[in-house]
Image (cartoon, rainbow, N blue to C red):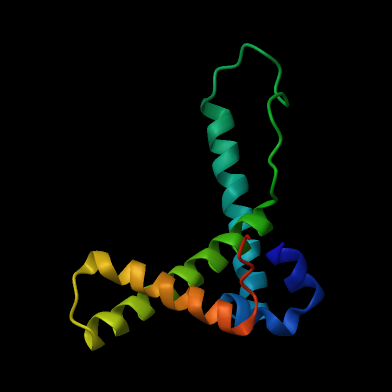
Length: 119
């Protein structure tokens, strides 16, 4: 996952998430503290029938959730920039931009050989 890769290669953090490794560590610390505060507040308001500690465990840690969120936001911002540039260059209906971008991306993937077409 993204968090594991960043832990292995911290010098790539800026390229992947758009923030430095030190900024990421600070953000993860703040997110962990805030998560604990919210969890304590929710537990104090909860009326329990069964003992605490039951239920499904989280699949991802807080650090992994924050990293995936940052990665997703960076990818979405990149797509928005591409769509904005395309809309300025080519005056078309908004619905056609997604189709055009997907066609161009498919052609690029076909050209570089990363697209595998079924027979």
